[in-house]
Image (tube, rainbow, N blue to C red; front, side):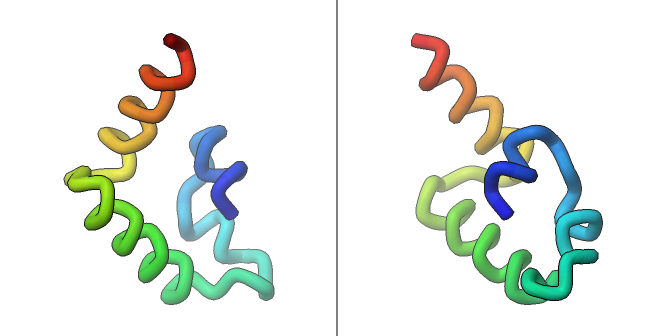
Length: 54
């Protein structure tokens, strides 16, 4: 799930896989956003890429 998100695939596209239901993926993403104090996936990914470029 997360490698697909890192290359920019949407949750709905990833959820087409029967092993990853959309509701469960959305729940996990919301938990990650809350723990990282990020308001959106785009902000979280941009911060992540800034960290790995250093």
